[in-house]
Length: 83
Image (cartoon, rainbow, N blue to C red):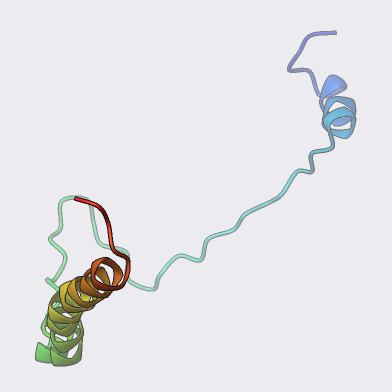
């Protein structure tokens, strides 16, 4: 039998444990013609700028190195090394 014949396909799928799945996609009501421009999506101010995210990143930018400095100072202050 040839590899792509209908008779060999089901047994080949059973042998390797695959199933055939039918995928359907719903077509939208308005399908633009080929070459037709789509309207641009208009973004709102809330989608472009999030002040809470800016505050979070800036605070971690300051807090991270500050905590690192304090921990390294405490480590070297309390554990004497011969220098």
